[in-house]
Image (cartoon, rainbow over all chains, first blue to last red):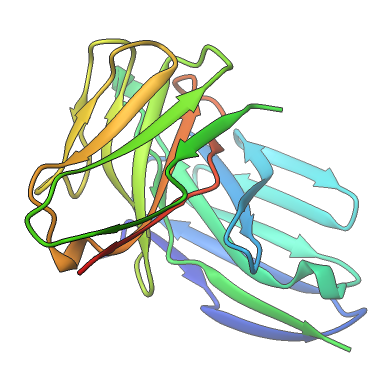
Length: 111
Length: 111
């Protein structure tokens, strides 16, 4: 099975609303990254996390290593938030650092 | 901001031909990675490297070779390209246990 599972796989939001994306993993992750792939295909870094939370503007992310999940909260969604969100989990133990990606959440924000 | 560049950005190859995708990073990161992205699969790790002269197999290495001649450069080599290798390829760099930074991607079509 998939080592990193993202939910939901697709999401449609009205501009100005809030939502949360989730990433569950079956590996002993020590770090998590969140990316946004824009419609042109570029991958933009959103967050890099060790266990804990980070916030940047309308985005907030949390990583719980004991419960093996991470969340990405979007507040006051805007049209430019549309795209595909990926999480990548990795374990830095044993010196073999190989991030594993989820399959992504496709987000469309509409007026 | 980390700078990772890839060349070419687009490539059309014939079945059985040799293809080399190049990646360059200017941030002195130890680790470099090659992923491919296909619809429904997210990003999957092909090969990675811990430093000049090292290459390691990722999760889907079959049909691919990698070369890391220097800290800055990491190449992905398809000795005998097949149509199943048609995909978008991303290179990334980062230090072990640290944030990854991605290049813009290379779109490869094998006819």
